[in-house]
Amino acid sequence: MTSQHRPMALLELAKRDSEERKRSLQIVQSSGLEIGSTGLEVFGGIITGDIAEHNRAWMDQERFTTVDLMRRGDSTVAATLSAITLPALAAGVTISGRTGPNGEEAPPQVQEAGEFVHDLLFTEGYMSTSWAQFLREAYLHLAYGHYVFEKVFSEIKSGRWAGKIGWRKFAPRHPSTVERWHFDKNGGKRGLDQRVSSEAAKTSEEVFIPIEKLLVFTNQEEAGNPLGISVLRPGYKHWKFKDGFYAVQAIAIERQGAGVPFAEYPQGTPDLEKDKAEEMLQNIQAHEQSYFLYAEDWEVGFVNMGGATTYDPQRAIEHHDTMIAKAVLAAFMNLPQDSRGSFALSENQTDFFNHSLQSSADYVAGIMNRHAIPQICDMNFPGLDEYPVLKFDRIGHLSTDRILEAINNSVEQGTLTPDLDLENRVRVLLNLPPIKEEEFDEAKEEEAALLAPPELPAPGGAEEGD
Image (cartoon, rainbow, N blue to C red; front, side, top):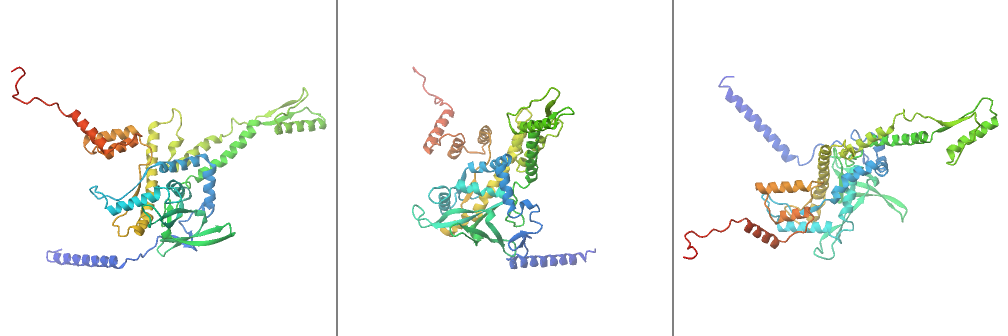
């Protein structure tokens, strides 16, 4: 390209770039509405298509039967579900206003809203169900794949917050009672139809609950599918095999343990004696006090079923037990309890598992922070620039020695300031009572006095006896 043609080419590129920018700006300005969809296929409120479950045991109402059989009838499943639920129930929860980039306090109105939300959730008298009960049931979304609550509101009649609108309860709506979901044309959830039964009237009807009234917890939501995926789904095959192997093992123990009695009689034995022998053999199986009398030339005993040479299903059962726990990252539960177990391996797997627990807790907090707290704050504190935030403390066990060592190193390096808040945080960790600000200041003064260098006599002072 010659030098005289190069400026023309650059002008053409600049013009084309300018047109592309204008076109992009027009799209941004004119497309406040969504154009595409999540791709979720819904027919009559029922989720279908490629994203739907392919195993019949996990379709529609069968899903809930399968989950209940697993979680109520298998000790390993029950233990793994407890392992992913109980740490969150035991964790501390805080409600606070957001802080700025430099750690400044939230505006007073946001702090007041935070106190309001805290009282609603954790102070008796405001809600008819406790936070622990709500959280325990909310965590069932991990087992079922999803779980739904209806937000029920009421006016607060007395106390500091009298006249404000609060939550009366987060009423559970069991997923097995949901008949169908409603979506907009882009795949966004609009609400659901629930089957409501009245025992008194002996009737059943469907009611529509709009999405604004709902808290929907979904595990591994994909393409807007509110049904989610149960944490037990990957372990279903192993539970199914294990359940069958237990039946085989029980039959084998019964047959090989008790044995099959037999009697060998000489040729020419009368039929009457054969019939009596057969009756005695049946009595040996049917009654614990049965016995057998036989002539000298008879042989009586138990057939060797070859139990020592047949395949032992226990190994298969242990394998599938491990895989069930592994499906929820809790494989450390099945490590050997003897010298073969590796402490380092257990610690690594536990740390990884704790990260998954923290992620689950953060998800639950996120649902509250997006679909519950802003809504109740807008009802009572209009015009907030920011909202209070619900946050779980660290989930999972961390060695106290490791925490104290990290704090000590951080203080020595100057990355942490040993103030009153840090002092009381450590005291809570060690199950010690907190101290007040005056006590803390007094202790710091005493520490400073001990560390201060001794005072030296002023130079040029008169010696004693002059």
